[in-house]
Image (cartoon, rainbow over all chains, first blue to last red; front, side, top):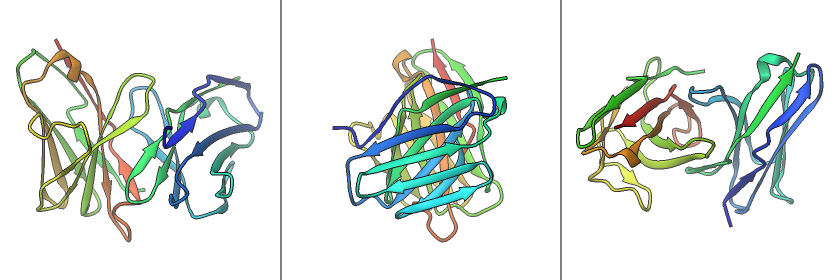
Length: 108
Length: 117
């Protein structure tokens, strides 16, 4: 079983839609949960960083962690074409396991 | 966020040559640096973790003699791919950890695309 599983997509939505991206993980000891955005041929850029459980909001982005289900989500409100990228989750503690990334396309 | 640079951004080399990739933290001191490898449409795979002034810790399956890592200062780590072969072609990304938790707060460089002919 992989440490982190993420649906690769691609996910295509119209501009203004709410986007939901998800990851599941296997190790209940993991305490740090991060979401990265990666544009083509670029390094990942940290979007959201959550320690332990709960929700965190930053502008149009909301990160949720459900430790009982070992499930994390990233919501993007009012999605924009500039949000088109691959979104990676990273989960762990001192060592991180990355999801395979979900490719998002927001159509104008 | 903190800025991490990598150089070169892309390199093409002949099989059998060695390639050095630099990773620099530009505006903070990185006590820990991480090297990842990313294949097309695949996840990032951690190759090794290095702490300034000490030997790198390699992940299982990563050849330490093949991928030489040096973390000589708090702002610079290098990855040397020795005797590169076509199967070493990949996107190599470093990240730097600093601040209150150098392991759990990582800032990524832009990556280096290596193509071995």
